[in-house]
Image (tube, rainbow, N blue to C red):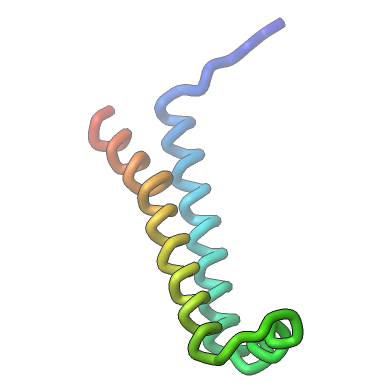
Length: 85
């Protein structure tokens, strides 16, 4: 049985590509929110009793939290590994 260990370079590549994929997903979320706001609100309004202001606040908070998590768990570790090694 051959178990190969992840090298620093492969870990950096993994973190980098994960960051790119997650930032692309965040961009799609923002684009959908920007261009299809009314359709998204109408769809969610059928499930929950939300005002447009509450709907906007939930999405902005979700996008901000997601962006912070991308930075904390993907981009900053990537930069630290690149600078350290």
